[in-house]
Each structure stands twice: as C-alpha cells, then as structure tokens.
Length: 405
Image (tube, rainbow, N blue to C red; front, top):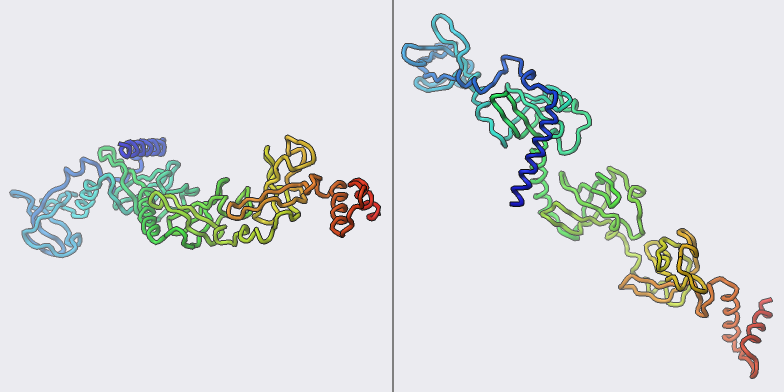
C-alpha cells in the first residue's frame, strides 16, 4: 500500500509539472506541418495491399475487388514477394490507380504503437519557456523543463539538435499530445549503475571521490558514475571542523573510506579522517598525570571549557576548576581562542577523554603568585631544608620568598 501511495503521489507531481510546463504552449501549433500530422484519425488511412507484381520502379498491389494501386519499390527494404501483404497509406490517385506509401503506414503504426512507459529515441528541435520540442520519427513531442535531466538545466538551448532517449509519460492521440521524460530514463540508468557500483564496495575499503556539493552537515562526493556518498563533517578530520567549505571546494578529489552502505546503496557513509593518523593513539605516553601543558579554548559550555592541547586532542576543564573560588559562568572566565596553562588530572585513552584543571595541586591558579609561592615551598622541601622544630609553614614560605629575592 505504501508503494502504491508513493507511486500515485509521484504521478500527481508529474502531472502538475507537465501542466505547468505546458501553460501557454499550444501543442497543436507545434504540429502545424501537415506532413507531420499524426492523429488518432489517421489510422483510417491505413489500407492493406497484396503484392501482385513488381514492375520497377513500382510495386503493383491489389487492394480489393476491382481495386489496384502502386507503391514505389524504393520504399521497401527489399523487393517484396508476390502474395505478401503490407500496410500502406493512400496519398492520391493517378491513371485510375491508387498511389500508396509504405513510409506513411510505418509512421502511423509507430504512432499507434507508442505506449506510456516505453522508451523512444528523439531529436531536440526547439526550445520554449516550458521545455523542449522534439521529434520522435516524424512525430512531434514535448519534454517539460523539469523532465529534461535529473538536475536543473540552466540553459535548455544547449540541448538543441541532440538525439536522446526518453520515456513516454503521456500520450493523447486525439490531441496530438506526446509528452516525454529524459529524467526518468537517466534515473533508471543511475539506479542500474548504482546497483553495479554498490556491488563492488565494502565497508572499510578505500576509494577516490569528487566533491559535488557542500552542505552545512557535510559534503556529497561522487564515488562512481551516478553514485554519491555523504562525507559527514564529523568524519572529515580529527580536528574539529565547523564549516567544510573552509577546507573543501566543489570538484576537488580526495581519498575516502567507505564507512557504511544502507538502503541498497541509496545511503553511503564516507570518511576521510579514518585514513589519517589518530592523534589519540599514544596520548597516555605523551601526557602524564600532573603534567602542565599549554592549550587553546575551543568551546565553552555551561559545565566548563574544552581546551585543545594538540590538534585533534581536547580535554575538559570543569567549571569548578577554571579559577580559584566558585564560578557558574565559564564564559566570564575564559574566551574561545584564549591560550591557557592547564594541568592534566586524568587520561583515558580508550575513552578519548582528558580531564584538565587550571589549578595546581595546592588549589592555586596556575601561573599566579600563590602558585609560584607554593612552588617555592616545594623546592625548599625537596632540597632537604627541613623546617627546624618550632618553625611553622609561614616562616618556611617567608624563607623561600627571601631566597627568590
């Protein structure tokens, strides 16, 4: 039922497109050339004739009791056999004989045999505001602009004199109305090409693609004739990318990986970062806990700030660790793009998570005077300068400050 509803909906849309394209276009005027007239009534001109003799340049035919006619031998592909029966059209009389044409009969037969859904070869002969005028043999037809190609054709005149294959989407012999679609043929060819191409693809395989369109969410890339996949912005680079148009341009080619294939190839997920080294590999060895590194703020959230410490590696500084004291608005403390000194408090390489803080082990802000004083105390203690009995921490801190001065 779903498929039938979809088909009916597509037919309705096509009818609307045809009517819009034919608005102001008189197909009867297109068919003013009498030599090309092909109406429902013309089949009445078809007559059957039996070959009774061949007298070059004519073929003698019997049309019925006491009725004979002639047809030029040149209209036959080969000399007909006596007794064979053929269709003809009556074109006149001469010396008491009917003058017949086999070509005319073939044209009428071809018109009568046209069916909705069949493919025909046609030649583009004209352009109007609604679409293309074409010839199917000696018959005239019309292709609405929306049916000229899968995508929009900016200048229909570029198709003049082209010979193309189209599908019959509407035929009304009583009105000399023949409407065709090239888009339907191209879409079916694309489906066949897609099926063949998809059969050669497997997730994880590498392939080359050309960027055909860039959207806010990603880039569409042609990976085979008529076959496109989507490179989502999140799969372009290990580095956070906000706007793909800053990194890619239409027509550019790049190496891609097939990530997934769904709906029989109608949806193909592509990746680019999967072919690049992962910056998270070995991050534990590069950043030990308690190490202090310089990073850049990339995002600010209500719960804290994300800081990039190398391309593709970000960590979170929780709001409670952004400054000494309590803050509820990280945006008042740091700004995007600001460089910060941060201390690594936790490394989770498998989970691709880093916990960071702007505070040193004593709770002082890194780089502040309090942090510098605390560091001086630690150095004094590490040098074995144990405080003598009765010397409090304040005195030890004073000694450290005096040494610095």
